Image (cartoon, rainbow, N blue to C red; front, side, top):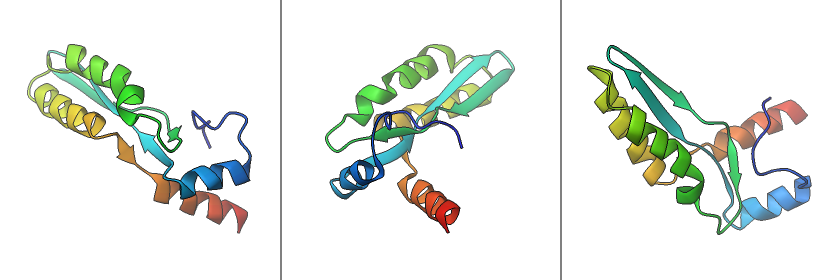
Length: 107
């Protein structure tokens, strides 16, 4: 499994405590286009502690999409709008999937 950004130095009990307080695992989307080619990608997984701003963490991906996403036809504008929508709403919450995957690994 890839490294999750934001878990550095945290114990399992600290992670569980943050999850109980509202922490979550999220992905951000970004889009890059060049005329007839458009790429829609997801960031790495971020762990956001309770009270941490998903908006701020997602800003680099939002900026990439806003600057470089529009230029591909026809998918550039479509993927860019979708990426901006997801990121400005705090990213895609994948907490349930991460918890399920780690429980499967333990079982």
